[in-house]
Image 1 (cartoon, one colour):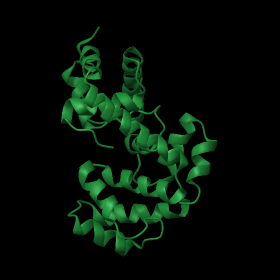
Image 2 (tube, rainbow, N blue to C red):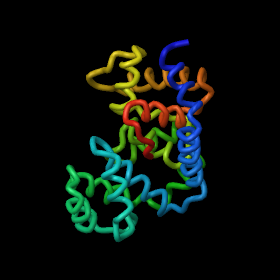
Image 3 (cartoon, rainbow, N blue to C red):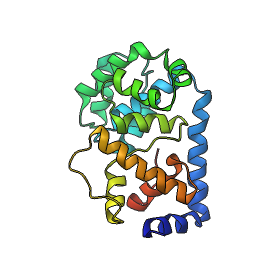
Length: 208
């Protein structure tokens, strides 16, 4: 048994932490009944999170006085600037360019398989790569994707599972995702739940 698996199994015995993680996963699963507008809001959140703090993006999403589905670029950009967001121009443009898909999300999610589902979002939504598309899908209840961000990479390197790569190609992403799938299997967790435990080991927090 590797030290990382031992660590995760120890964390699983923390009742308060496990309850918090299970409740977070339950919240994600509730998006299976979400409207297209609710799904689009979460998509916009994941567009915003690339190279930005999750808590800042959560505050932006929570306090936006308009609907992301119908907001203008100026409305979005102004709100981002009010929160001192790093990339107000390009990310507001990405959201505007995603708006034509706002009413197709439920259909896309339910008709495509696991591989094609993520590929569609990467291909169609500017600003989403493997990590961001996986993040979105995890946040709306699909637990078969790994979110390989800096925190996960640091944890895997700390426990000598990988050497942190300078860049992550699609091939490298899938290789690391396979390693995470093996860890998830050994710890009897879904990839979505494993991600929350791994993120906690690095940050001490549970965020979406």
